[in-house]
Length: 186
Image (cartoon, rainbow, N blue to C red; front, side, top):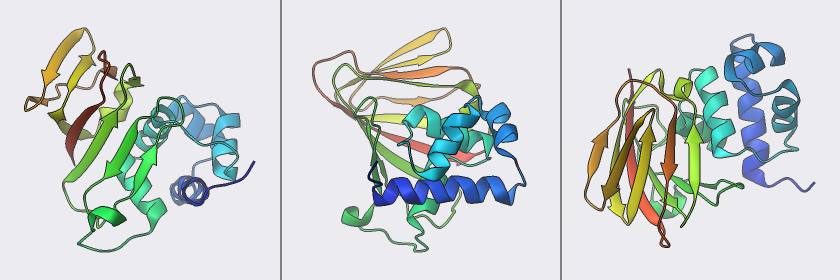
């Protein structure tokens, strides 16, 4: 398998974060719900992780997904130009995630997402245990499933997430949906 640079940097970042917490692969697997074999593949750069997998791993490591990606990018600046913002595409769904905020570890992160037509991205509840989030729809329609509650959001609508529960970002339409996620640590 040919390794793209971001996948290789993500591999090293996940490994470094796990090592920094003195966690074994087994301990991270138990915390995250991701198999030891998949964690090993990700850390070797042999698998391009999906958004759902990275969310589970980052939560288990006490990081937001943006922090994990920013660490992989190794940036230490307060200004990040649009062309330099890290963009990551989920290999499963085609979901495109742009880390808008400068990766300096501030209290607030902004993430722009483009969710393709018909796509669904489920995220486990434990991915949200240590963060507050708001979703602001920029274009299109987003169905956000939050536990048993379903929110139908159109351009301009903004939703503050409630207590952590299993969630899904769903685009039930035939057009891409763009939204901004603002998040901060609890």
